[in-house]
Length: 240
Image (cartoon, rainbow, N blue to C red; front, side, top):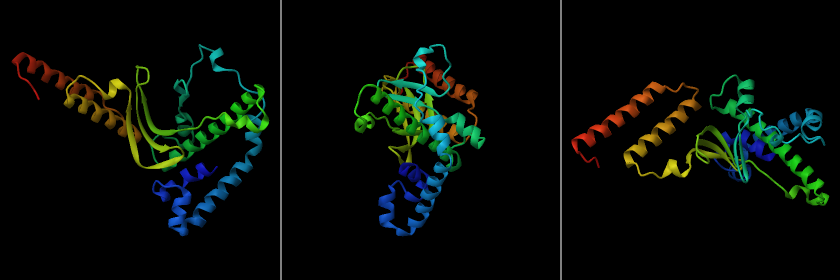
């Protein structure tokens, strides 16, 4: 629960942990303590619900047994990772997907509950394999990043994202990432790569503000670059 409290009061921590910040400024002790107590009481109030529906002994069927099922939450996965979204819950609770402190809290709470359920299911799996009870929690998975905006592509292991949380710690500045070799390295001219990167980041930032993406404007820019390349070839002009 300490990580959940850390995210909740991240606007006071300036990218640091609770221990580091309170060591610098003890005025935050009472503020952080009040948040922690409120969360503990709220989780305890709904503890019967959590135990009955989320961490019971009846493990759900594997989704692999239902190849035709439509997955609305899991966007992708790799050998040792899963990419999932809590956007539906955030929009249901907040009425919007605009990225701000009010929408991030329910999102982080969903991630926290998913982590709890994952820990429980892995412990159950370890127990069924005959692992001693004191070692059943050695099999772990954790949330590495919280992406405020995530844009998958049609190519495997290629996506664009804006991250605000890493390893349970709120980042001091948002981190924009273009994941995948084809998105980073290319034989295209540097100015075209820069144009692509700028437009991609611009789209993600617009989405984070709840703005619509104007497709026609993007098409106009692409068409203009295509025309420039065509005229450069026809005139034999080398553009450096």
